Image (cartoon, rainbow over all chains, first blue to last red; front, side):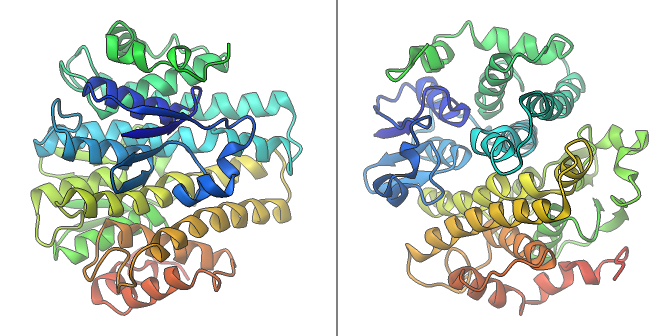
Amino acid sequence: MKLYSFFNSSTSFRVRIALALKGLPYEYAAVNLRAGEQGAEEYRALSPAAIVPTLVDGEVKLTQSLAIIDYLDATYPAPRLVPQDPLERARVLEIAQTIACEIHPINNIRVLKYLSGPLKVSEADKSAWYAHWVEEGLGAVEQLLAARPRSSYCVGEAPTLADCCLVPQVANAQRMGCDLSRFERVMAVVEHCMAQPAFIAAAPSNQPDYVG
Amino acid sequence: MKLYSFFNSSTSFRVRIALALKGLPYEYAAVNLRAGEQGAEEYRALSPAAIVPTLVDGEVKLTQSLAIIDYLDATYPAPRLVPQDPLERARVLEIAQTIACEIHPINNIRVLKYLSGPLKVSEADKSAWYAHWVEEGLGAVEQLLAARPRSSYCVGEAPTLADCCLVPQVANAQRMGCDLSRFERVMAVVEHCMAQPAFIAAAPSNQPDYVG
């Protein structure tokens, strides 16, 4: 199995957590987003949208982190990251998608580049934009967590797809200097996750292409 | 079952298609996004992120269109909108998420409002922004479709979650005046879908809150 990844990409981080939780060995293929390597013709043949991550598993070539994790769950089901019970499953997907559809896409590197480039948005306004969507999105996640009994992970006592999405989003927001202290439930889950070996192994600073 | 929806919301449109394909009756609860009804305290209790759609099914209250459709698939499995075969499933999710994570979030109404409001982006620059993400995203979907044998729907000969996402995205882009003619495979699928009763029933102009 081969994962095309960039150390600082939070969507790559999601898949790295899933692979580590499942104990699956893989070859790490670094795609340097800062150098624009994702736009190379050879990589675009794997990823038409020119984004990381891409998973190659035998004949299977797959983009989109949530589709990749679903595929891993179907193919290598131990441990399951999306529960099979319809309601638990819905809770996990609701949190994962609040992050994957409401926060990350609006704040990813190519969108921020479009703001500074064609739209000539100032650095200060760009930071305010970033912080705004984090506030809105993690605020929603906080309420989703607070609506249920406290648990070690987002949903229950085992890690799920929701945690695979939450931890990288929080790491990203912290790197951008956001104050997340008011998201008490979110931060408690992240702290618990970041004490687990799989989450540590998947962290940006532990990747072969890490640049400090 | 009750669906909180806005006629022009493409994420609501996704769920309406799924409900229609499964033949599930539901109460339509209109949330007027133009009047800001999604921000009302009562609605925020259902949807912490203050977005549509929200599904209420007995005790279950659920936001996020893809999580809702997954829940409907688990609870009312005929017909399945996300196939069970791991590879078919991955193909469906890859296309659905390319739309749901790469196009829609960047172009939705609250993001466009932030561009015109705090960032004072001109109408022309806002249209160019919209068109840019549609071009990038539907370009990727076109390549995903073109990499496989031609089929009536996105994946195979039955509608799936991918079609539930594609049709509303294309409708949205057309409303914004985008020229989509170069996305030949995309447009062939959409044309096929829009000849089917479930897709017609779910269309914005057939909703009780429609305003022309």
